[in-house]
Image 1 (tube, rainbow, N blue to C red):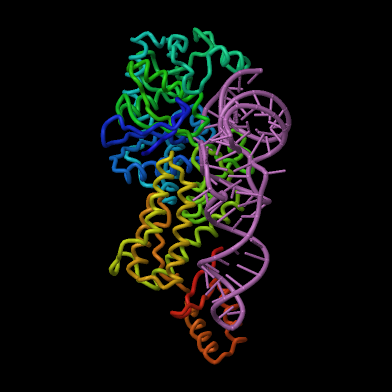
Image 2 (image 1 turned 60 degrees about the vertical axis):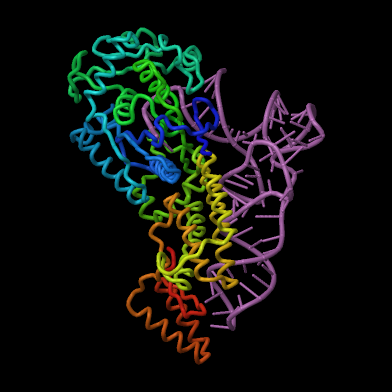
Amino acid sequence: MLKIFDTQEGRKKEFVPVREGSVGMYFCGMTVQSEPHVGHMRVALVSDVFRRYLRFKGYDVTLVINFTDIDDKIIAKAQEEGVEYTEIARRNIDKFMAFLRFLGAEEADHYPRATDHMGEIIDLVQTLVDRGHAYPSGGDVYFEVRKWPGYGKLSKRNIDDLIAGASERVDVDERKRNPEDFSLWKVAKEGEPYWDSPWGKGRPGWHIECSAMSMKYLGEHFDIHGGGTELIFPHHENEIAQSEAATGKAYVNHWVHHGLVNLVGEKMSKSTGHFKTMEEISKRFPPDVVRFYLLSTHYRSEIEFSDERLHEAATAIERFENLFRTLARLVGPEGDGEAAEASPGIVEIRGKFIDAMDDDLNTAGAIGHLFDLVRVLNQEIESGADATVLRGGRSVLRELLDILGLLRGVRGESDEVAEGVLQLVEERGRARAEKNWARADEIRDELAAKGYTVEDTPEGPVVRKLKG
RNA sequence: GGCGGCGUAGCCAAGUGGCUAAGGCAGAGGACUGCAAAUCCUUGAUCCCCGGUUCGAAUCCGGGCGCCGCCUCCA
């Protein structure tokens, strides 16, 4: 039975879809004010693995990831660079999409942008005004928080504490009836982009777009809404208030919040400039390494991103690659040849993997079981198990790796080698046949200098590229 | 000040009442190898501290210490 944690209830709940057989998921993607960083990749990965696993469980999944492509910072950045705000948005959205592909995340079904949904946003604001939950004031429109009794149920805060705690920071604005009210629509300042609305020229506040767009693509009540923990308050709290006040019904069943990605103990933050861009990461580490690393901690935990951690992940990943290479050598490529059912030990491990994933997507536990599976397969190889059994075991490993989206490109083929390398390997073979060990080792050093390592197996030498 | 989270072997990290506390990285010993590599075998934990509940707690409750996040744009 699949259980998924829900921030609102503060516990794992059995997953029961709103509509039988299908799942609607909405994740807050990014505000495209600056380049995507590793933190954004965690959303991409968490949503991707949720989708893969729910699909594995037989659901028809619709995934929506939004882009906030209009806000103060984007406008400021555009003015600073002297370009249209759309240019800033386009550039960063393109990068986000490129890194999704880099990581091997499947495309979402929809990537809605705020600026493409002004009609829906304005309609929703109007509904809230009509229902008495919001009020126009000086070209702005505000949500009246005190009129919504459920306010604070997600973030477990009450309004008075909020005001007291943040008294120095809450905007004091004479257009608001109460300091805790938040804007649904903001009047356009001179020189800013704007859209026409019943309240004059302006643009949406930050929170309303997610309500409008999620309900457009997934309905007024859907299954999973996700994002980073820092979005719990105020963004998601406000989203619940707006959406439920507008529709009069429950909005989301499972609020899924992943932990933040830190760099050496400190949160990455746009305001401090303390973050790593994906561009930097993608140049230095292969996709599987980044993916493996991000999945080796439970999604709700914080995770520290460091070179040391990434290098460990790279070493760990090699265990899988080595196994696939050995298997390809012994029993041929995947899909070829007769396969028997995997051995009982492997079938048991498969069950444990699924149990872990059923338990709120415990990818860290699941990966632990995967290493058990690797060991069992290596043991079977060592003990000379039948090729059909090995093929069966390999297909289970592949099935489970696919759920995590790992090692999809790794088929165990030999590495491409540069010119002259094979000749050296052959020469080394001759030297070894003549027991000229000194020459053989010398050639091995030469190969290492060129970036290759050679392993002697019963089936002959295997050349591999050294990992940089 | 308010709200919330975390503290498990050298490092990372599962486990949330009951078999010998997963797994990875690093380390040590062994097998295999001409030597390696890969692989296999063996090897490491007073579960932050102090009380309490319980037949039984890493796991629940109370207190303490330490670290972190949110309350303001942020995945």
